Image 1 (tube, helix red, strand yellow):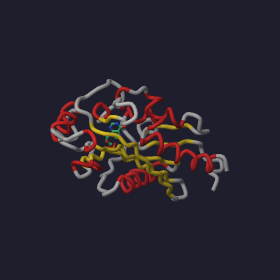
Image 2: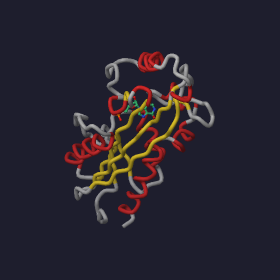
Image 3: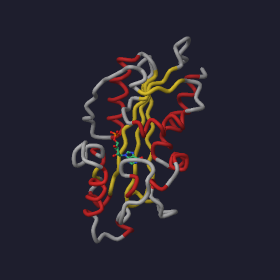
Image 4: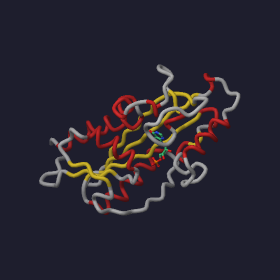
Amino acid sequence: MGIMGMQRKIIFATGNADKMKEIRKILEDLPAEVMSMKEAGIDVEVEENGTTFEENAILKAKAVAKAAGTIVLADDSGLEIDRLGGEPGVYSARYMGEDTSYRIKNKNLIDRLEGVVKEERTARFVCAIAAVFPDGSVETATAAVEGYIGYEERGENGFGYDPIFYLWESDLSTAQLGMEEKNEISHRGKALKMIKEKLKDVLEA
Ligand code: IMP
């Protein structure tokens, strides 16, 4: 399925500038222009009422694809903490309220794990990416990075829960990694690389 004569434009359905930076970096060598919704002049509100990351990613990409007529990618991601029954999970952005600062959210999660030993603080960032093509077909990719919730916030990079999410190998938080280092191992980096292979096939067909 080529996109014959179509503009080689890919819209990434997110309003999150931090995510957009990571995404652009990973997709920079694709033969297509990667635009945010804002750059594409599209403004749609999507209710993320799916129960899985994958469902939400598909919901978002389809809603935007309707308005766009080009390839649309969307992601849904979040943090799962085993000891908290998988919370905040698909509610990661909405946890304690969308407008609550991550200082407060992160502190709250550390408090909820008080007295829990490192081995039982297991957690993962999960990312599902959906690509919707102009002919309506859908491809998805889901990936995760395993780690644990630390005892304090560390690092200034990244966003969201990065300061409390630590990697087993290095005991560094993902907020202590540079963007390229994080993209190399992250849930979003891995899922994007998987979807990128599928996009290459379409763009080069
Ligand atoms: P989404 O925009 O609905 O996918 O919400 C994702 C939420 O999960 C973000 O707002 C963050 O709270 C959290 N999250 C996802 N990926 C990351 C990451 O790479 N670092 C830190 N937090 C993340």
